Every structure is written in C-alpha cells, then in structure tokens.
Image (cartoon, rainbow, N blue to C red; front, side):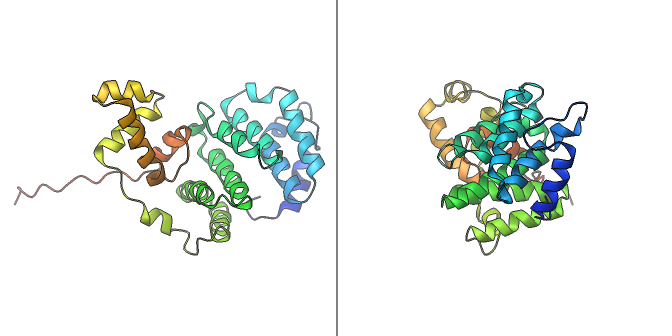
Length: 239
C-alpha cells in the first residue's frame, strides 16, 4: 500500500480475508480490512470494496476498539459517494482516542485528502495531506510520506513543504485555547476559564485551524502533538 502497488496489496489482503468476509479465527482479518477496501477501490473493484465495508459495519467491528472504529468508519468513507464521504471521514477523525494511533490516523487523512482533491476541494485537501505527511515523516514511514508528497503535488502544491513553512506560529493565547479545545471543552467553557466571550474563542479557533493545517476541532489533539517543541529562550544575563 505504501508503494502504491494496489493490485499486489489487494491480492495479499484478500488472501487473508476475502472481500465481504471476515475470516474466522484470523485476527489479521481486522487489521487489513482498510487495506483491502482501499486497494479494491484503487483497482476498480468497487463492489468488493462496498461489500467489505458493509461486512465491517454489520459485524459491529467499530465497537471493538478505537482503532477499529477509525478503520471501519474510514472504510465506509472510502466507499461512500462523494457527497457523503466528507462527513464519514470527519466522523472517523473524531473517533475518541484516535490520536493514540498516529499512523492509522495519518492514513485516514491521506485518503480524505485524496477524496477532497478528486472533488476539487483543494484547500481542504492540502490541509489533510500536509498533516498526514508530517506524521509519516515523524514516524519514519518513508514510502507513505512519498505517497503524500505525490498527492500534494497533484493538488497543485509544487513544493509539498511550503504549507508548513508558510503557516504562522500560534500565539500564546491561541495555543492555550487550542489545548483547552483539544480536551473537549466547549467555546463557552474555554471562555469562562480565560475570561473571554464564547464568540471571541470561536474567532480564535477560526484563525487557529488554518495555522495548524486542520479543518475540524476533532483534529486539534493530533495537530498539537505534531508541533515541534518550543525552544527555551536564552538567559543573556549569564556571562
């Protein structure tokens, strides 16, 4: 999958668990489910992809763990019509605890970015793809990073790293608001803590999202985790 050899990936995944079937007593059948769905779509096997996504849904796989919730919901998004896919991708990214699985989260962002690019939602596509690229690089997933770079170029970004360079840093207040929002607090609750109106908090979040390269509140935790550590200022009073 990382190399983009989708036919080979489909054959391997289908050998573990055929499309539309969750092979019994084969734990890996759950872990390769999204691989099978994505590879099926990318090789024109749309019926097989839809059948496998439906099997995951009907078997209640999403209820087993946050990671499987993320993968099963993303599988539905990959097979959904273009007008329904964004809502399902956002639902997948909003999975509680999904930040504990950064590689899988980046994979979902990669698929989401591809879908947005295909439907000409270029700004949203670049945001998702850039965040995915940052995660793949941080994890050392070089082939996946190469895929993300290719998608960014297809989305019109000749320099895939420009978005990160162009982003303005968060101000101290924006960082505090973002951190509080990432914990699940509402704008009203954040405002009460910081002595701001909920409208002011909302206005700050409106500025924060593009700085972090995200499009939803659900993506805050992962985006904040990917920020480089702040360098301590030098103490120039010492000789």
